[in-house]
Image (cartoon, rainbow, N blue to C red):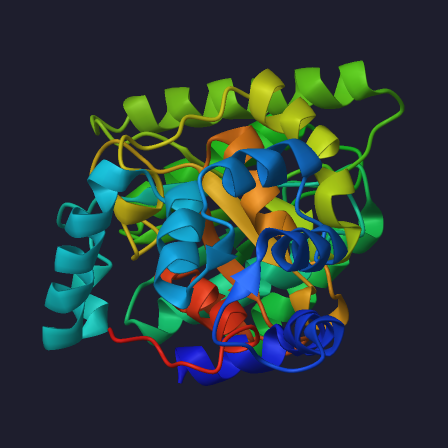
Length: 337
């Protein structure tokens, strides 16, 4: 199911690749690989590094290994595979768990227009479908429309929303939402944040304050759980979104998990919360190769992909499936895996 959704989402990218090649090949040259990866918006410095590691005529297996190494550190790949094998044998709801009755707080960060509010709704539905008790926090108090959007999604999904008046202190709302979520034994709290203020300095200060206050609120509940920060990026922006993303990840102190993508295909980790990226609108662009640039530059895992406009259009990012989708548009041979 995930592979089918991903194939449809990546269709513009993969169709463009096959077209550029004039059809699928058994092997491709470095020149051909360079052309298709530039067209799919991989950063050129990263592309040069990739080409240097490959022979003149490149097989599917050689490119698969090289591309996976860009998305997942080598030492993590075996552990990631082990984790996926276990996941396939167990019910997914039981896999996406934290310590019993421990609240997971996820701050959703990103500029307006990236699909942040819709992504919150998708995440809410995702966790609710796993049997989680979910609460939403309308933390973008600088935009009246954002508060109303979160409330509207809450009604559609039958998920409670903590909200306040437009212009009120968003950090105070975050504190109240966490206190309420802990008291009522919620599993997941998804907190919206402001996407644009008058200056970037104001935005940074506001986000840092929300992070500080949220962590303090969690700590006051005698839990060792850390806040998770999810950065929403517009996939149609391609590699040009990397600089914008770097601003957020550097100033808001995003922390990569030790195993990056391999650590948790569940989008969570135990007490050490996993920060990461959610890429939206990939179905509307041929710039799918930018995901390699995002992971390489930010040193953060992509956790989810938005694959459409509906609340159910969200999938966990699987590096192996993502690479397989690209390779299927290049090579006539199927993966041996």
